Image (cartoon, rainbow, N blue to C red):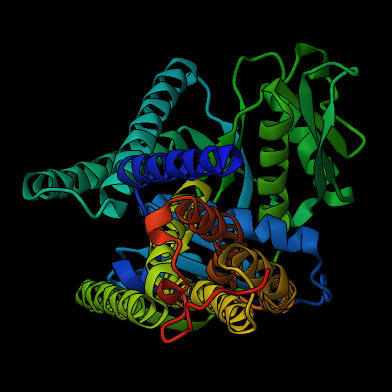
Length: 485
């Protein structure tokens, strides 16, 4: 009895913690529930790059992510599909043509020469740009919380609308700053086509990192001339990706006579491993002459999203209530205890979704509802085994214990096969299919926990009370004559 009480206290504590998590951590809603645009991008091979590798896809994905940031869209998602496709989700974007135009372009990487007498102005414009980028990050974070929190009030919704206007204003300011900075640099005829590789490496085995860039023969000559013109002047080589400045290294005075020769150079600075790798990926993405084609566009209106949420919630609540009623009516006392376990299961599952940042889509909700059915199925197996034991003449306590023991193997086999299917769907599937597999898999794992632990503890704890120690409460119509153990 003492062990059962401890388990019940643990389950009660988990349920309270789950309620706190659900109330404090907003649920992330997918594109089909929030409304927006989804695009499938096909990366086309070229004569120079006939086979697209994972390294190439990573670089292109980073370029696409950078362009999305320029659109000022929050809660975006860029996922790789297969070997040469990207799935881009843009919540809140109602103009798919704009997204197609921006995302469908081939990356443009350029090395530019900073104009004389612009050193001070460049510092000022760069500081302004960085301030705007910090403001944009904060506004996007606020927008993410508001858009995913279903408990926001009307005033908070109005504030969110004002926040969107402010977001657009900051976005325009960033575009203006990028244009102002671009005016401070002159073209140098050195583009990403002549960049053969870029990678990050540690600096002298310390915590500092640097980025190595390598050019082909023609690029090496152009870079040597560019670096010689810049060396020792205090001006920078502007590295632009899609007309956005991504780095502005200076050149040491020792290269004033010959420039940096040999076709390679090192960009040093206050890089850590992450920032150095990020810059290297951007450089590789800009060096890839890989055309990007939009092969599919899907737009979901916010009204359709709200309707989907409401209908899904109604379906989930109605289904849950019907299941709770059925369990209580058909299985009597065990059914009522199973209902309590189901409520605990639902709370734990939703809390885990929020903690893991699972994005709920319609298929994801379907997976969650299906997992409720699986949780009920586990309880049904246990109670049917318990009834069989009672009808065979065993005592109530032994019947309950035997019911759990006999049903466990069936529950385990059933859930393991379902989990295998979930792993296969998540591994091989894409987009919404992955969401379905993820929510179903999490639900199956938690349903095993609640069915075996929560239901069992509640039943054994209840059997400790004389008023509930009656076989007819577990199996209606059974004879209450003295039974064998």
